[in-house]
Length: 247
Image 1 (cartoon, rainbow, N blue to C red):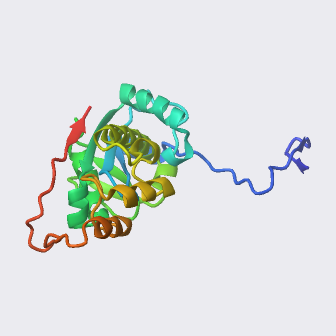
Image 2: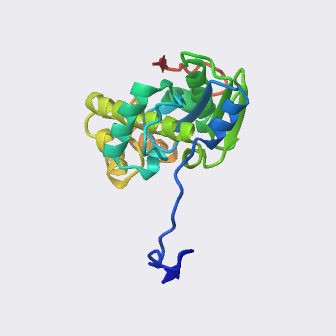
Image 3: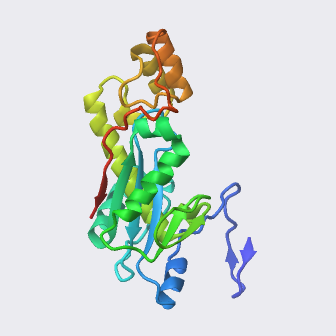
C-alpha cells in the first residue's frame, strides 16, 4: 500500500500499467496569453497502409467549447473516435486534405504526408498564426510552426486533428471497399494485415494500392510479371485528384 499526504492508505497501481496523462491545452493557452490566435493543430493518418491515400487534418479548437475526453486517436476505440469526431466538427474550425497513392509513389510517403498537412492548414477557413504539427518535421506554412514528437498525445489541438484525420480516412476506405470489393478495405483500412496480404496475392493490386510498397510490388510481379513501370524521374506520372476541404 501507498500512503498519501493525509496518512490514508492508497492501493498500488497494477503491475505493468503505466498511467498516461491525456493531451493538454497548455501550449495553446500560452500562445493565447501572448495574443497569438488562431492556433491550429495538425496530424495525419494512413502513412503505413499499402492502399489508399494518406489523410491530414488541421483543427482550430474553440477555447470555450473544447470537447471532453479527447486523446491520441490510437488510444481511443472506434466508437469513441466517432463520437468525438462529431463533437469536434460541431465546435471547431477544421480542414482535411488527402495525398493520393500516385503522389505517395512519386514523392515518397513522408513528402506526401507533409504536403497533405500543409494543404490542410492552407484550407482552414481562418489562417492560423501558429501551427503545432505531430512529428519531427515543421511545415512550410505562412506562420510559425512547432513540430512536436508524440504531439497527438501531448497537444490537444493535435489530438483533435488526429481524430478528424483518422475517422475521415477510415470512412473513405470503407467507400473504396465498395469500389474494389474483395480486399477488405472496410475492415483493415488498407493496412498490411494477413487478410489483406492474402487478398493482394490472390487478386493483384487495385488502382488504390501504393505501387512501390514491397508487398504490392510482389503481388504485381506475380500477376503482371512483364509490366513496365513509369519513370519516376521524368515527372510524367499522373497524380490523381486530391482535395482539401475546410469546414
